[in-house]
Length: 193
Image (cartoon, rainbow, N blue to C red; front, top):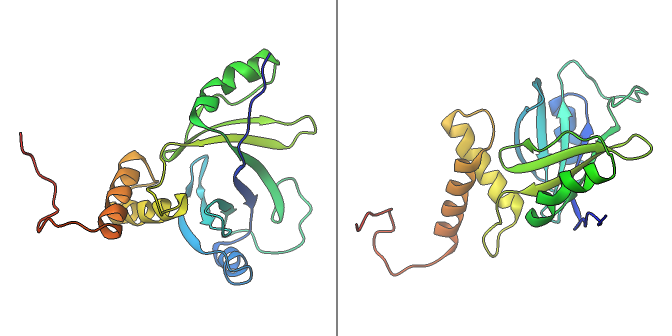
C-alpha cells in the first residue's frame, strides 16, 4: 500500500447564501477578486462563484437566491464548509482510485469538471474531501485564475454552460498573444500545409 501525495490546497468550496451577498463578502470585504461563475454542475439551479484568495488558487461558493445570509446551523447550510479540496498532480490523480480502493474507501470515481478532474470521498469524521487535478498548466507569468477568468469570458460569449477544454485552450492562446511580443505583422492562425 502506498500513500496518495497531496501537493497543496486546490480550492475550498463553501455553501453560501444568495449571489450578491456572496460577492459583497468575498470581494467587497476580503478583497478576493471574483474571477468567474457558472452553474453548480451537480445542482444547476444553484450558482457557483469563484474567487482568487491571492495565491492564484480558488475559494468557491455555491449560491442560491432562496438562501439569505445568517447564522444557520443546518448541514452544509450558509457559512458551513461544503468540502475541502486538495491539489494533486496528474500522475498522482491517475493513481487515486486504486489507492483509495486498496484501503476500502468509498469514493465518487473520477468526475469530469470541464477544467479539472475530481474524486470525492469522506474523511474519517465525515467531512467531504476532494482530490483535484487541473487539466491545464497556465503559461509562464500567468496563474490558473488568469486562465479560468479568460476561459469564463470566452464561455459566456459562446453561450456555453460551463468552462470546458476548448475554452481553456482559447484562453491560453489569447493570454500568450497579449502577453508576448512577435515580429510577425499578422499573428492569425495559418495553414502552411
